[in-house]
Image 1 (cartoon, one colour):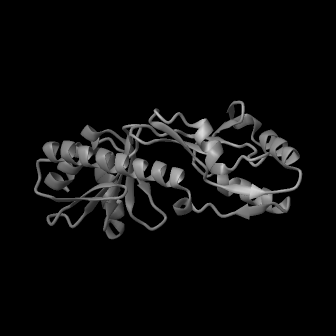
Image 2 (cartoon, rainbow, N blue to C red):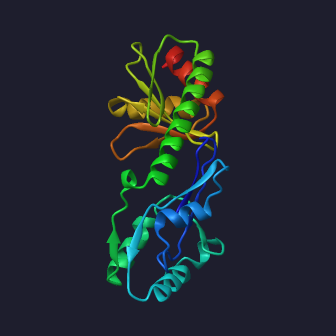
Image 3 (cartoon, rainbow, N blue to C red):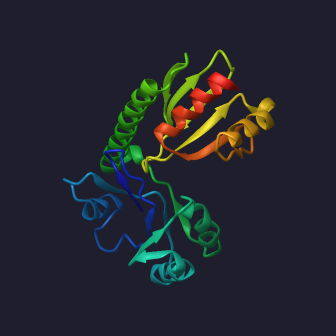
Length: 222
């Protein structure tokens, strides 16, 4: 289970590993119990398995993740890959994966819709902030991950992947054939560049001011 800030402002890197299904409880009921209906922080089940001795399985998973335990049944999931890491273990334990059908659960559907709306509103705000700081002539749009700017001058597309922490990731579309040149340019103005597995350049953990600074300097001097 994870917590979601439906206002779109916070990344919450914690996951809960627990048992649901005793008595008349079901996933939707349990999530409503955990969430405060008047709070912007809501709960969502992201993966579930059915198994025999659930307490032993739960204890085993908690023991494996002891170094990532934050409090009680809550664990720090820095890279947001806990489900992927636990799936092979649960397969070995013959646990049966349960498909989570969000569209069949009105509670979860509502939570995810609110999260999406919050994310879009946040991305729109960031687009406005960047547009006021970018001095070059670039075209703008919004996609699910955040604002996008395209430059006819350099041929680059600037993808901003919005992070709720306020430190966003900037990817340079159409930069594969000019990666080395762009890497040198960005290092000279003080930014470390990473190479995506698909070959394009990216710089992570940037403030709005840093993103606009990078775009302005590339457009004026690259």
